Image 1 (cartoon, rainbow, N blue to C red):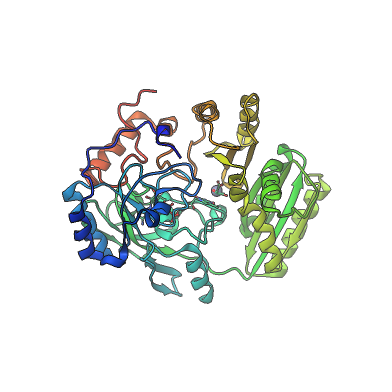
Image 2: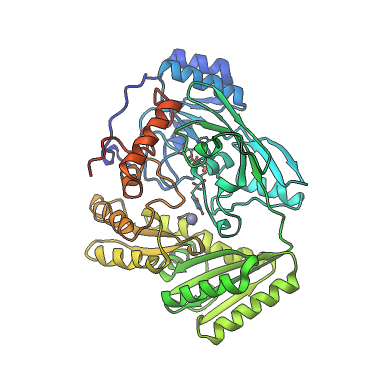
Length: 480
Ligand code: FAD
Ligand code: MLT
Ligand code: ZN
């Protein structure tokens, strides 16, 4: 958690004064401003404990009007701000780098409405994903996305990072599910693009600028999102496999045999699950295998779904694709199987320090990244080099752990792994975003001209650069 890790200069922003705090008090009241160091502390550090800022002020607006008044003031005063949702981001985007004022959306947590005919939910940005899921279940619907961080991440954070997660293989990305967005620009202007229509081709699709721009173009205040019907029948299978070739064969077969009922397809290697066993004391209920697949089906007819799943499993066993497996259709057993996959992130973090890479790769190179990096880091004191993730979408989470942060390890991984990813035609950030930690890697996946255009868009929407500075955009000119 040291500042010497940062190769960045503070921008020419104003410094917070007592007069600023008094002004903010007029907007949100005393009880929704944090200025005590101990209260502000949790907002300064990320979930992974890999970045740390030194903001002295957290504001907790409840309405779009309050956000607008705060930003208008900050823009005029040249005070930099850092929007923060559930602070579960993994790219260091949600924390101040220097003394940016944190604008937390955690009290913007009202559900505004749900239309059970269209399946469209509208809510404020600070609603926690799991709370939305619970609310929708009562109406016979689900959220189109699900993440291990569902208990803390907020829909505004999900939209701002374009979060992917465990259901993307079935319901697609938020660029498709999010129908409307309301956002506040740096100067306080409110952009109302809260359409609830599935089809709306009226001019440029501005909502997409806020999806995935990680708080650098505007602060998302409301979201309208298309929510699928709650599946009546859900089944999960945890399968053990002896090689990556068998993983690919099984993936292909699952897509073919399960078709429209396939709702998740996740891969884990032995090292990843070992972290869950070692550090969280969870038990994998099948024998030790080099690879595992967690396959979920969701549908409307349990007889039909179970028959399809049984046929797929029989075929996979007959053809020696899998060496062991277990299957669940009761909610508590399904939950236990999912816990193994969802807890890998926590399990790895408990090793000490976690170097996290979230890359998209062609399937033929998907697991090679782990082998290549393991070999490359052979001489260094690392604890684990492992891979898991959303294989159905070609997105692997490549993780390295060590007892404590080591600059030498970091410099051996980067830019090596980014160069390798670019060479095989992958993306250096599949779903976690760029945040603060990956902005020097953007050029491995985007051309210089594309990055210049991003800078031009930033200039139009945030001319003073007060919104989440030092994040997403690499500095120009690109030198490496
Ligand atoms: P934060 O972490 O608070 O913020 C993330 C970024 O969005 C920051 O740049 C912040 O400035 C900006 N931001 C937040 N709210 C707003 C807003 N209202 N307006 C403008 N900008 C805003 N991610 C995945 O994609 N898939 C996964 O499967 C997944 N699993 C995870 C599992 C675990 C255990 C953990 C810890 C994280 C996981 N993540 C995953 C990463 C993280 O949960 C997502 O990026 C999530 O979308 C972040 O939401 P948040 O509310 O916590 O946002
Ligand atoms: C996941 O799929 O588990 C998340 O994206 C978090 C991680 O990469 O560890
Ligand atoms: Zn993921």
